[in-house]
Length: 254
Ligand SMILES: Nc1ncnc2c1ncn2[C@@H]1O[C@H](COP(=O)(O)OP(=O)(O)OP(=O)(O)O)[C@@H](O)[C@H]1O
Ligand SMILES: [Mg+2]
Image (tube, rainbow, N blue to C red; front, side, top):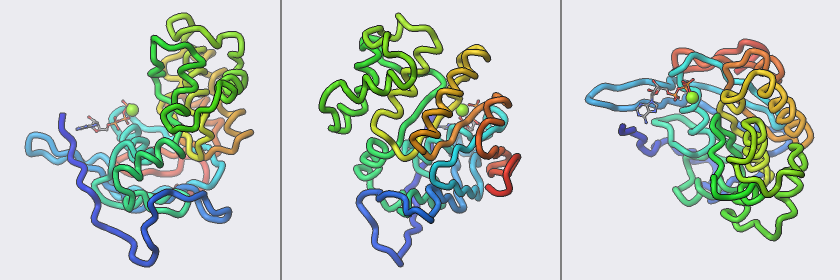
């Protein structure tokens, strides 16, 4: 499959481009998305996945995104987490425009500011839970010792599973390791794409409760894609992605 992700040409001229994304100003939104389009071009056809999408998220807010399969939820998360670029439109994070960052700036943003949790945990099978959780620190250069990894694993209740490899952990435990890994660099933005989609509903609820607790304690701004209505109802706000844009299901705004 090929995707077409041209570099957006829109650029704010009133402010200098910054090479790194600065911390969110207290009163300003954590995330501001304006007129976001994402089109894929395949076999001469244009597939319009996101069309004029707007989104504002406050610092520390936990927003659920729901929507039918294929509506573009993962596409949106990938753009917010700088894993992909929009066709056009702007994504501001902490007051800086992501489209002003070059590839290296985006990589730095991803490493320092974003934690991802995926439906399938994507843990490295040859490494222990502790090594997996420490991996983002090693990649970002923040690694000093095992302490942060141990603390994160304790936070998700896995202090007695430090040296288990993923294959030696239950599904719920693997997903808790994935959450610990997403949070170890203390990201300001946590993006979770069906983090409990692979778990039975009871385990999924427990894992989400834990995610919620940690999110509250650490005040991460978070967006969770979920098909689970119970999980969505525990978020601060629910948005539905339909026909390429978001509408409020609970809460007053998108
Ligand atoms: N790289 C790509 N090239 C072309 N089309 C793509 C690409 N990635 C996704 N799509 C299409 O874009 C649409 C949105 O995909 P996306 O993965 O964002 O959906 P989703 O809402 O996350 O669905 P699900 O709930 O099944 O995970 C789908 O129709 C998909 O086929
Ligand atoms: Mg998806």
